[in-house]
Length: 244
Ligand code: 13P
Image 1 (cartoon, protein in one colour):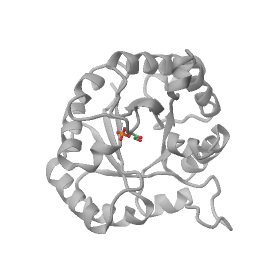
Image 2: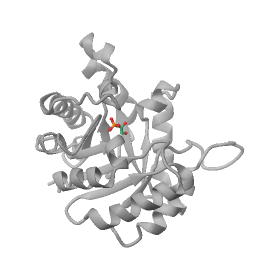
Image 3: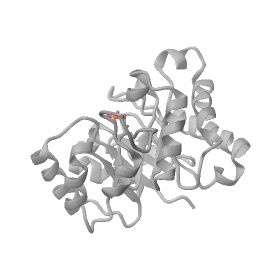
Image 4: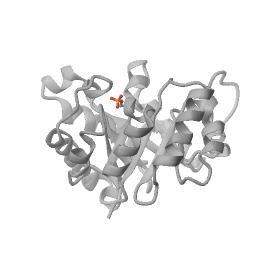
């Protein structure tokens, strides 16, 4: 039985006061008893969230990390640093980073660095609208996984985020999402049989309070990676309840 998980990706949003209000509201409204709950603020706010969320069971994720462990890499953040300030997770390979030029190989190298620092990666994959319309969605997603699967480890999570559903209000239907999650689990069963059943697969892309239950009811959808709706405490709490 895989434990459900809901992760909020706050992307590049917020300020000290906005995040303080949000975390206080989440602390009052979200229960991490029946579901793993993770939030991922921008780097500068990680310590603030860590402090305010202490004792709530809400976990912390970075939104990216360097593939290097330390050194002359101006502007980069090492996986060890994230671990040092209390992160358990790191989101890697988000499509917004891939669109800015991050390659499969870079994502794979970052995942190796994350694991060696004791972080668990949330590995993002997903196709664009053009790729889906061309009938290439499964090939694109399994191609992205190809770079990651050899080093996949116990505790890693995979987030299927179709690019066409991110921030657009257009969600994959539960059937579309389950179809891809089934493909991902079948790919894992072939390439990493020992991990296939236990690896949690999250869906991301316009997950909202009103569509979360139907998505999470699908067999291979173990939770969600939530963008916009994770910035509203009531909506995020409702999504967590749907997964619990
Ligand atoms: P939205 O929920 O805003 O579509 O964002 C999804 C996402 O990119 C989470 O990583």
